[in-house]
Image 1 (cartoon, rainbow, N blue to C red):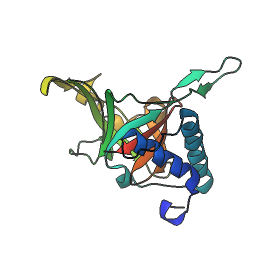
Image 2 (cartoon, one colour; image 1 turned 45 degrees about the vertical axis):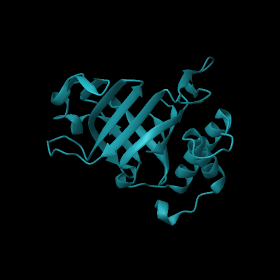
Image 3 (cartoon, rainbow, N blue to C red; image 1 turned 90 degrees about the vertical axis):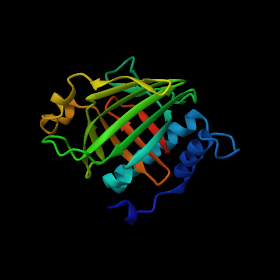
Length: 207
């Protein structure tokens, strides 16, 4: 079932829309509490599984600002992990993720590329690398191979990261179990949400 074929309950959608709008200063209404946002994200994830929602990779293309994340912690009395309380990302540390089609046609490059950056004042730190999107699972596996560090708009370092280009050649052969990934469960024109390999949830707003 595609996202075009399914009408999703608007309750949690409205909550997440309000969370991203208030984070970006696009509304004067009070932002939802962290507890309410986490509940809305879990509702969205449950609905995506029940309704078997699928999203094409093209719907992710572009740049997205990280608004909210949960993190995880170990369960005390049983194995596994549990979600953290969740928090709005501080405005002083602007975190952004971006997805785009490959600019190169190298073997093993995957069907997409990912960029992840954080800017804190005059310092910009950016990682990029190949990505592989599995549309039936809404799962995007990736690996960072390039790092860029800038200060006051000037590039200080731009080069390989943990193996660099050598890792690109065998990226497609890597097991997803060994790669970081995002499992997307909600994709709209204005915001997206996913669960990471570590179990945490994240909410981004379109730049």
